[in-house]
Image (cartoon, rainbow over all chains, first blue to last red; front, side, top):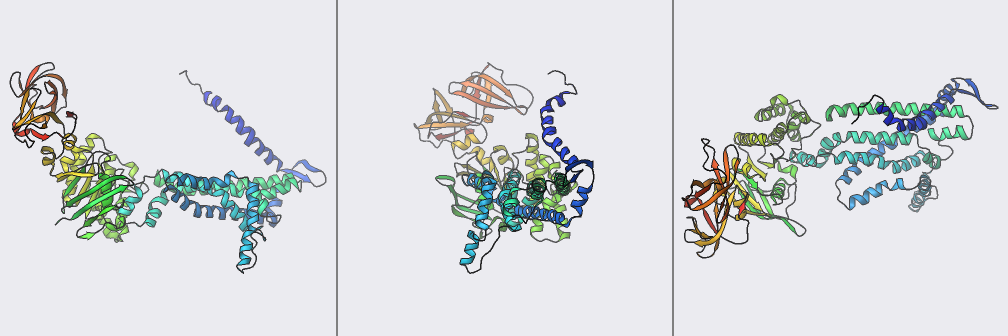
Length: 284
Length: 355
């Protein structure tokens, strides 16, 4: 081995750094700069700088309600993914092949289908003339229209986000000593107690990483709220799109995008800190 | 009356019989080892007692009560797993306390019993540590304390010492026996280590291919192995094939004496002789002549490989005063008292010497 100089690590990470700078830092910086530009409806983006984009967004109830909805939908989706995904991962870990492979494929399935096709599939199911509504009419309960509601967005998001919850949780379960549960049973714990007291605390880090992925992707989701939420129900990503493409007010869109990014980061970091600090203390 | 009884307990997986009609009676306070090579069904037998594997046939009786189909959390047996299965997110005290919590034991009594159990395994200083901060032997002792604190009628040990290094394993053997004798719990230990089984159990149960082939006190299993497999699995054994005589065998033109000789005269037979029962005598004397081909030092004893007319014979020689009976290449005579040799009918082709 030749002697290492202090420049070697820099040299080795050079391609990654260039990629990161070009693909992440540069566009983000440009967006940030853009968000401080003034805008005039007749002229377009002006060369002067202002904070008015931020004050407009943060003082307008319309935008605030969209942020609130985004937060609510992302939270509900994350909670539902935990409620469904954790038991599913546990069951999956108790399965033997070939069933395990088959069910893994079923779980990853939604990711293999294009988001547009998947969303139109949901709109056929959830629309006022869709399968669920027709079944409800046949049962004499009258038509139900789930499409273009927050419920439709949540259903479709949970569907596609589940693998991002199940896979980290499943990985965490696989790392556990298979003797832990029998040990708990032998000490008098019921199956439920054994899972609650012994298994769950140890997979909390898996649930944490799953939640972060699901929350982040849900809060910034674009296609699903766009197709299943309709024109009226906006989420953060869709309203950014509107500002850019319909209003042509790029600086305002950039300001919204930046606010969403910062809010997302703050929520995820706080959550990460809270759970991780607790888990690390115990799990080492 | 026996305390724990296995009645023709069997376990089959498809066409494979893991455990084949095992009958065993264990008295209260007894320390029984299930000994056998891997895959002999000993762990499956233990799991059926624990309720972690469902028997295909037969029954398990505990203190007059049938527990064959009872859930593991209702049996109340103490189990020490091979991996210890300590709960990594709980401290030592919390681990030990878990079984008492499940039994809804009050806080004050729980603390007292946890402290008692930890004192029993000499870990009172480590109550607030997490399992990852302990050494292998300490984790092992936490597992024992956790299993014993619930005052189980039977303690089940699944290869409890196999994850420890040789030195620690020996210490823990004595420690295990001391703990078991202090609390007097009926104990069943599964092991593949014959030394472990012989040294600490009241009774050794040998299993081969899912069948129980011998159940006796350690000395009897060692001195009177019921099958040829046991004779070679437990300790070292010289197995010399020949033709049975009235008192011994005839092999390769040599007559080898033995008093314990149940084989029919004139039939093929095997003479079994433990290496430590053979004495090396000056060349020209003894029952068998040979040349020392190799010599190994084990600290407490020497092992000699002696080439003779009937093949290679292993001789063990205690290192009492440092004197050596023979060096490599030296012709020697081998002698033994005819009472120490056993002759059995030869049933199948077997290797002559098994380590």
